[in-house]
Image (cartoon, rainbow over all chains, first blue to last red):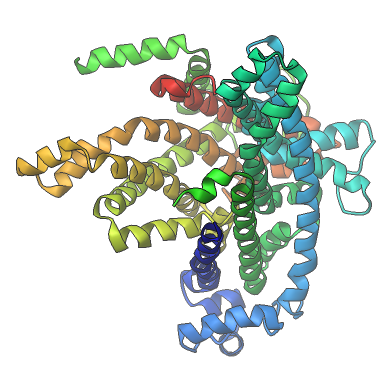
Length: 306
Length: 283
């Protein structure tokens, strides 16, 4: 039984190495001399030499790679613009992104599951079509435009909620809804499909023929079993939010990590770009791992395979 | 069954499936607009008129004007060209590369399979738009770099589809028969085995164009995509963001354009999926 867990844990090692290699190579894949690119236009040859020295760009690649990974965590790697250790720059920003994604996933889960249950219990009625129509809108909506529309309505027209920043709990509402709604659409579709599949299974038919009340069947038997795949989708959506939050963060001026990465691309602050991208990808890998392990824990069938 | 006949059957099925029909209609509509942009757009998309900046919708400018006094309707029309051309080219390239890599990975198996598929696992470890951002961080913004970013972003999906088809088909009898009759391995793979993955690839390809349009506009909004003054929906929305209070209309129309286009591809893709995989219906 523990085999599955151990195998899954071992499997993430090559992924983590691969992810860190890609982040490391970002600077080396830039066309041209990386030191010249970092130095920017109008840099003197001394500047370029200094940067080559500081970034260790003249050392062998393997040495540079280990210096890169070690440098992030030891604080030796510094942001070009602020000269602070990158770890001090990205950690608070990452924390802001995680807070936003957590609020977003709560919105997505509550709305998504509710909508999915309503659709499934009213299959092929107007209500079903309406909620599935909403979920189709949700997956086609550009997230940043959704954010702009919410700002226009609730901040500009009604003046109820702040359009940006991160000051108090109120600042979470609009970005959280923006980030959560597209995922709510996906969770709703999954909940509906999963419930309809369970309803058709033998044990539910048996329960119905035994005269067990409909409410018990829906909420106790069907929903409980239907939630297994939904848990996976919720977890995956949370992972996607860590990366996808960059658009929401830009709309609302949220001080998150994704936004910092994008700003640092413009200022050519590559240490921040590299470590920020690495941190988001790593957290996505760990979220996926947690989802897989959780799935195995609630669905014993998976553990027994192989 | 000859080719014309089977096409006719597909068209009949598409017209019967409501979702596919609506999707096909929207996609066709946007494609025609993109093709006819030079004819139908009332103004040049980048013609500035600073005297009529940020005007609301009127008889002269149906969608109003932006901060530079450019006609928003014309920019939305020309924007369809950029979004459709980049997304469909990128998805086409990623199908070619992805299917090829996925197919040889599965057919030859072993170390090759491991290396190729693990590499794609790593690419898929960058959530959502992040991989595209990382590629733009390397290459810089601009049209061809954007195409490269979207292509790489979409390759793993197609590789996985091709791989799973080949894995399930390669042990079937017709493959042995072809081999015994002296067909070359490449011939067997590309002429007999791979055509089986055609329908999931068509479905996925349609959906991925919609995705790609979202990513293109997202990168544009972040300032990492198509650079102004080119008329790109996401880029125009990022300019509009500054003037939401004075001129909300500038933030509406490009968004509607993205939304409807992506919805068209999603409807068409989902509908095709129901048509091509009837078992999936009702799910």
